[in-house]
Image 1 (cartoon, rainbow, N blue to C red):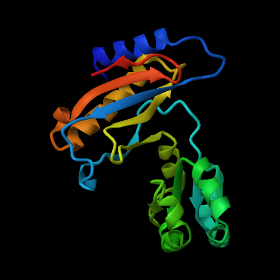
Image 2: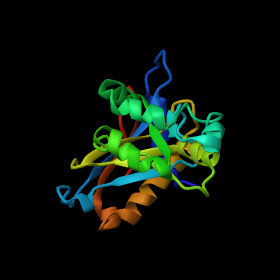
Image 3: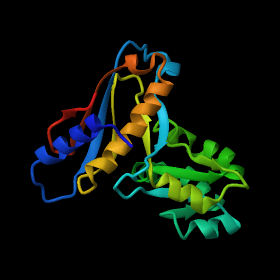
Length: 212
């Protein structure tokens, strides 16, 4: 359960957001300090499962064959086999379109080497290399978990953003999501909370409200 200050900040961000004719997302902006982000080991690079979900559709593509592919068809947005993977390797435009449209990729371990060969130069720089699926992993469970997952990627920038919900979620649900993210950052950053300068929450078009 998130603390009251986070929940109050979220409530204010939701209340101050002007009426729009579309469903806005709620985003978190994190500003880092006292970190040399030219050093890759200092950069934030995390996938985090949000306890209340993202409030948005998350597009997931699975590379798989056989029984795993059949099971994935019930939950993933698209399932591609080895032949289709090879075809993408010959069509840069189609591969780039797929990378831009897809939030997360999952792939059977047996296909990871081919993915590196055919799509590594496209997925790698975008931070979208697939999550490997071992023979013991349940593809349905993995896809469903990733539907509630967001990426934290700072790169070499001190400020980065991530989605934490949607405007029709409750302030408590969104605050719980923020709490999980902030706790992970505190645990992972070299100096914990001291490496975080400020954190803001806002709807897509609304004003930013300071969380911490």
